[in-house]
View 1 (cartoon, rainbow, N blue to C red):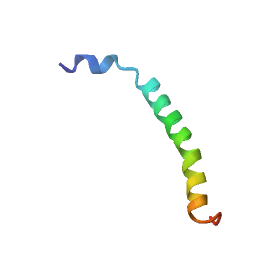
View 2 (tube, one colour):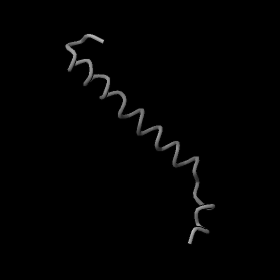
View 3 (cartoon, rainbow, N blue to C red):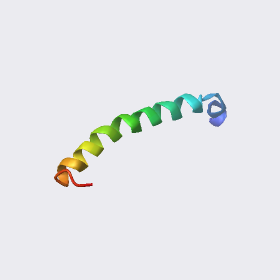
Length: 40
């Protein structure tokens, strides 16, 4: 059942995960700035 786990490309998964985090971080920072009226 778990024999396929060794076949997963973890590097690709982590790269996609970090790209998603970076893409979400931009709007998150803008949202926090707007929420705090531009005061970090």
